[in-house]
Length: 268
Image 1 (tube, rainbow, N blue to C red):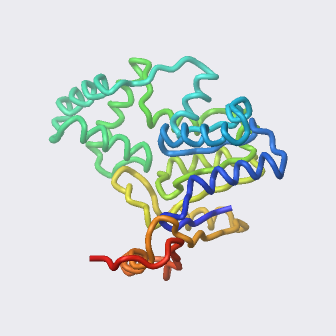
Image 2 (image 1 turned 60 degrees about the horizontal axis):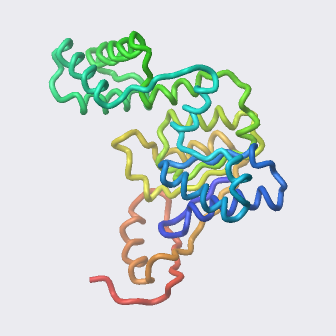
């Protein structure tokens, strides 16, 4: 099920409602549900709301977290892992920049490494060698960076299928190609997949997000059902009318947004 939610239509609230529906109407076991969010803060908020509805004990059984925290927990169940901290990452980055005589700062280099791991190898041969050297440096130290957590998640053997029987993904427009592959792997033997997002809010392309994920999902899952949330709870009608003239320039046709707050002051 793919829910395309316009701005201000309550994506997280809709995701929580779906979880409650699975628990209360379908009698799904909490431990068979995994909900993926994009921040730890959002995960905590979701867990708190569920606890209010179904009790703390049952809410704890639902797997809620970011891609990274879920992969970390799964990896930790297999073996002890040590994550690279920011200071050591900067030191390794500086060493490699110096070794390969690459211009720019360590922080910029680390961002490039992250894009490489999320999207694939760069065409630039010099950078490719530098990235491989970075990877070797981490392996020699027995460390994983945050992107390695996702890559290791792809390589984990099956055996965790039950927790992904019902997989729900929030802020779908923000996922990277690597995270998309994780969704496919986790849903491989799953019973249901539910994603919710807004392609018009896809603003994180600079850090690897792939706004084409909606079209890709429709291609990979031809039987998927799409629901569009059109009622905006946040803004007055004049604000929506003004905004629609901008976002309708994006691909995908006209945006049918209606405001729950009715008329209001004109946009100045």
